Image (tube, rainbow, N blue to C red; front, side):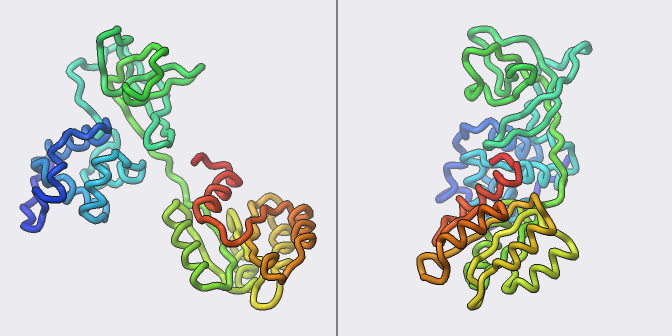
Length: 297
């Protein structure tokens, strides 16, 4: 068992964090509060301890407990910190132990808008007036695990007695950003990094071509107008080397008169390029990259 941490004289036991004593609606938050309490930490210390473990501000950690916005990376970091299986912090230690004959089934756990592969040991079907925090329902041939309140009311709901999650391990997709505006390039890199990508920025087509020849990127975001010339040659080179790589062209050149709409349309059709006009919203650009890479949101 982890030893309780020493008191932090600056930990906000009241004031802005007085609401931490209230019961959160998220199942994941309630389970993590129970797990933290089992480590010997009083309830009003949970946010500050979570902030230390995940490298967040205390207000950011408090918000995670409030809205249950824990990602699979957060849960993995907690498991590594406490040196336990990743499913342990989420276990409710049910009073009804799994039956000897009960077999774990493969399932998908719905969490924070994402679907995580898991193994679930299932109990009996819930009766009309029975409740279990996590339940499993059938979706065709697949089991889906989710909070009781989020499960389809019309489908039979089975008790989840035990849950084991194995987070997907994969390298971050590499995104190349060719943009001669330093400020915009920095904003793009920050946004893609926050969204789970390894982003690299380039101010010239020559630099990008050199890096891509050594280690091709998974997707490319290329500005059309670069220091007085177009990125046409760079786009053709990328497409020759990687016929199927997602390639997005950003441009404000049409509005500024530095490019003809017909020229860019012809390039987009010939090279199978997605075109986004500036100014654009970062979230929409990233969403388009996700779709082109075949990722779920």
